[in-house]
Figure 1 (cartoon, rainbow, N blue to C red):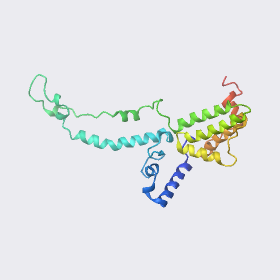
Figure 2 (spheres, helix red, strand yellow):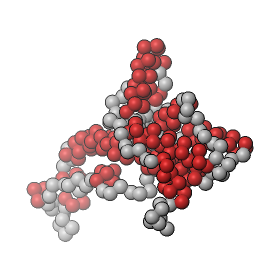
Figure 3 (cartoon, rainbow, N blue to C red):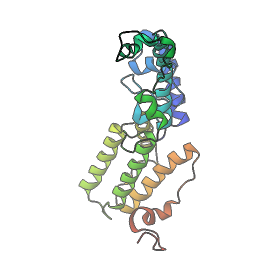
Length: 241
């Protein structure tokens, strides 16, 4: 659910082409118009037409920031090179003990310090930045699996109804809209409906939903017979105790 899938990006491109054929650019929504712009690979546009941080990996987000800095750099560097050394440092052009101007040939060439943005991109990534698509996905799956593990063994009618509603709303409001759309679409297919009768069924269903994403990403699937050890009881070897 969390990571951007190649199939999802292709689907967005297909929808964009359909809109172009039907009504042209003037009928496009902001997100579709923004997608027509040249953006770094992996960058996903939100429904507001702007790059979606929670839909994009931190590496791809940094690529966008670096490109912006590279685009802005020529104008800032050219302006600094057209400034003479005496005008750049007016107070240093005169001796503190004499009114005679100091020869400009003794001035050292000005050095350009990296901007705060450049320094940030070159340094280690902070751990308190907004979640990217990968961090959001890991945290979300942890939450969903843990909720499933604490679900009643036999849920009553009200609990079953509320769990269905929760999963529906979770898919609707998940910050990565393209991930949410994929999750909602998967749930509506025959055989993929949430099994909310009790803990065992919901726990295995959640594992299967996670494995669906793993398959699309080419990742190793988890053995769903071990879901209780992983998410509720801990491993039988006692390594979690």
